Amino acid sequence: MDLKPTDVLVKSAKGQAALADRSLGLSPRLRPMLIMVDGKRRLSDLLTLGAALGDANAALTALAQGGFLEVAPLPQAAVAPAQLPQAATEVVAPAPEVLTLAQARMRASRDVSDVLGPMGETVCVRLEEARTAADLLAAQQRALQIVGQARGSAAAQALASRWQNRRVT
Image (tube, rainbow, N blue to C red; front, top):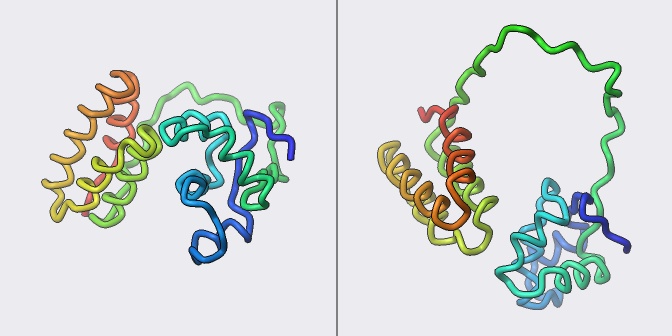
């Protein structure tokens, strides 16, 4: 399989089965890499995130050759640039996304995982353990500090702006 950096990767049926049933022969060094394949990340993103696990390129190549992942199909109804509506002159702030505490914990954990990869595991656990909205807010503040230290202030600010538009019920 010839993979390009812009390819979005997804788990094949064999890959999904390998994660569900550990007896299907997926090596322990490939399992974390396959878990990161979510159908949203490009190959280049996976290589960056997987660098903490070792040789991400070799792992993804082995997964592709083993039939555990495949390239996501392109959307069929892509809009041509000429069909896009003209930009509005008035900027309207998006309505806040209302989430339950459980949803907010999961989303925050996923966001941190997207930014930090495997090295953010302990931060994700703290976010997932939050029992109240105040606990979650405190865990998010700590997560932003860690993201800022690990990936820089721009990454922390991007994460903060993503969280700013969410409301917990």
